[in-house]
Image 1 (tube, rainbow, N blue to C red):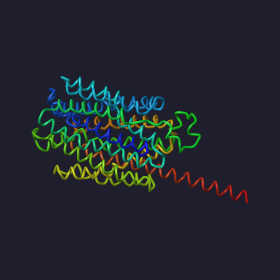
Image 2: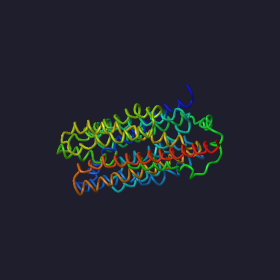
Image 3: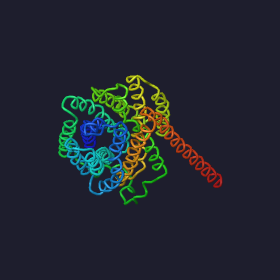
Image 4: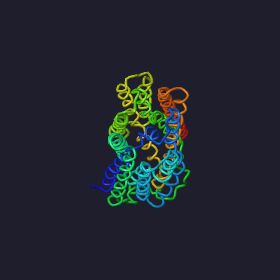
Length: 413
């Protein structure tokens, strides 16, 4: 088997374990907060927003820095760095005694971890250009497979032995994952340039990655991240409000999060592959519009399982968006600047992750938890409009190019 495939499959499996580790305890933070002494409903919502935003804020700052370091010193180094630090930070969350210590660890998580971005950079740099859509889509499925399994197992562990043990088990699993990547993945620094043009081997200015297409895709990425995650931190509170009890809701929350992650993983394995066959911009538009349409009724559904089914459909449809975005931007970026590219994308995505829970917290406190759901179609439609603007701009540029070419040809005649 070719080395790039061995790396892809190994990193894919390692990411499943990695995301499982994070999701052993993270989806249940609102319940853990209550165990730590925060009992007021509004305070629980406030701290839930802060804890979900904290790592995103610090990760937004650090992502480009780690990206530049990965371009210079190697992508594998960045992945094992993220996993090693994550193992200690996750386990540490099971040992804290108050919510302020938990906030500090979440901030450190954003600074020193980031396995998803590190894995994407490693795979993108070691995959032939004509297989990028497949590789990135396949890799993205690992994130959501881990998210589908982790909350379920973590919920079971939490129900029987408590939330603290869930975090400690997650930390141990992450350390085993670190050993897997350390000994099996081999980074081939030259493979990424074998099929590229000679100019890509030359030194390329950092700012060259900020093309009109790349910047436009960053805007779409920001809004899709906000739209997809604005309600996620409040799923446990939503379940608690519907069931009107705290008994057994960790398991139910785990099942819901697991199902949402499963549908997104399925999208990564199926919808993202279409990017190698069809126009990527048109695919983005279709995914975003359909996602917006299906998300409109969410705020008006009172049955928990019907809500979960429709929400899962939204996650499936929009699950094909990010792999296609990354494929579009990667194809236009020189190999020796892809670490920086994904670092910038990590920053923008982290800003989305930071804004979403804080926005959701403000809305849920001022109005109600269900009101947050009304903003999902809004952000998906904004993303759709951004893609439309990009498409019209490209059509206009192509039209001008054709007219110029035609005039040049006529003048020569």
